[in-house]
Length: 156
Image 1 (cartoon, rainbow, N blue to C red):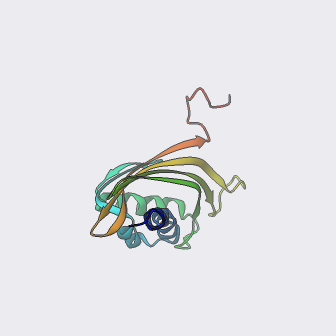
Image 2 (image 1 turned 90 degrees about the horizontal axis):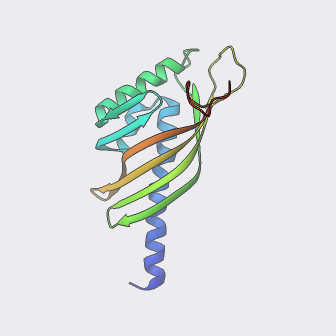
């Protein structure tokens, strides 16, 4: 394989991986919880604001519950919008990769505070290729704003 072919192949792999985060956002935000089957590995671990979940069934159940909690208007779709930016991907092996991206999370359901911004965060992901398809093997969400209660970063 030529140098250009190798670089093009790596770029295509990285784009496939970036699509996972977009697919995650579209599936979760629209309430298509079964769409997460095309995002996560069967034994994946997800650590986000609603807790840590391991295994695809637990992830789907936990994120479905989060969707229900945020769907205060009962619309059944888009109670929040996950905007993903600055996605960096590093291929670490032929079937593994790591990445980080920013999350800007908007809340669209009615609430007392009219500010639509729910949180700002960073996802740290590990990816694995399973049967020729990339999947998220683990993800950890670090919330940058608002600071957690009791955090030294929290304004008093």
